[in-house]
Length: 399
Ligand SMILES: Cc1cc2nc3c(=O)[nH]c(=O)nc-3n(C[C@H](O)[C@H](O)[C@H](O)COP(=O)(O)OP(=O)(O)OC[C@H]3O[C@@H](n4cnc5c(N)ncnc54)[C@H](O)[C@@H]3O)c2cc1C
Image 1 (cartoon, rainbow, N blue to C red):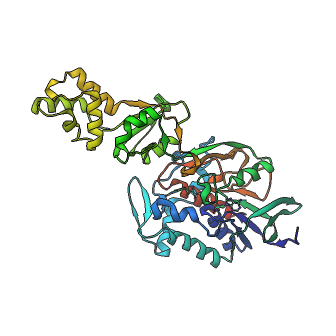
Image 2 (image 1 turned 45 degrees about the horizontal axis):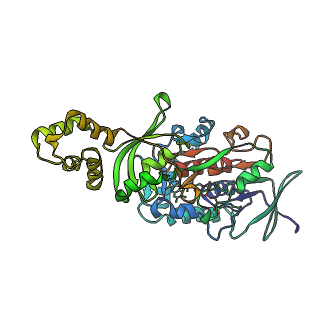
Image 3 (image 1 turned 135 degrees about the vertical axis):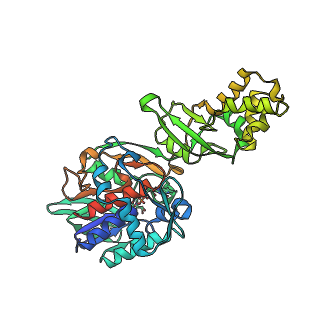
């Protein structure tokens, strides 16, 4: 190992959480080096939100996060809020807009957010070392040594900000979990979250003509007090189901579970079909359904549930069957598209081993875990970046 160069803080991972943490530590006068094996910083920020980065959610609150310890995120989210990040965007002059459900996007390119963070890091005196793979980490009497392909650093604080396993093509590695285990921290099982769900081949073949069709739907999972539901867009794909409502529910779904779909939520479809039958008895069921659903979807359901008849030929029982097919559809996905397309990784470093005010490992002073590597996973809609900002910020106040 080459002679270590002393610094105060080494941050591994130049993503949202790592950059935020490094900026804050640098502003406190700490000598900070951020290491990343990728060629560019903040790649997930750059591609997020279709290139416009859904950088936070105006209403981000602990209830929007999944974790084995749902209360863990409260402290960080309170200390660095969505409003704090919005104020930062405003100071920088980055224009933004609310798309829906409190989701805030850049008007222009997500690159503006990456540039803001890298400029802030430079101004705070922090150093960014890209294309720098970490080859070893050791604990020393007064901190850590971090060996890299470009030399070794010695630091009093080490911040692990290397994200989850999602999108390996973009450099996601699961390295953070290995470091956690090495230092004796427990992990909550990891699995892909915010991910399209797949269907069995027979159902897929039946739904084949719907690939590309989108509809506003209510998708739910679980029953009674354990029910979770989202009312957002749903997209039929060649592999199964996608769209925001499905991505949301995928974080709650487990293999073997059913999900329930309402494709015309909030509509008393039975009543609407009876009215249509009374007023336009010679109309086809597909035409009546097409006033509420995309045409291809209306046709497929009508053909399957009613056949080639007029509304007048259908009994109340038959109308109820159509209603049930539209708003009471239950199905068992066979799986998900996995880390290849998942937006996040559920699970991760068990929060029981971390201090919720600082994100420091309780048993290893000076070692911090921030961002997605921690067992805190947001819903779709800007919540994951807010966790990255909040957790990075709080660690940056003390690291
Ligand atoms: C396609 C896509 C779209 C998304 N859109 C949104 C959105 O609009 N809004 C939202 O809130 N969330 C979104 N997310 C989720 C969000 O991007 C992540 O939750 C967030 O980036 C996590 O931040 P992080 O800093 O913890 O990790 P990351 O941003 O993943 O950063 C981790 C960094 O660590 C580096 N790294 C990994 N392993 C190593 C290693 N061994 N050595 C050195 N460096 C390493 C990586 O190269 C990377 O730069 C999206 C995710 C995806 C995949």
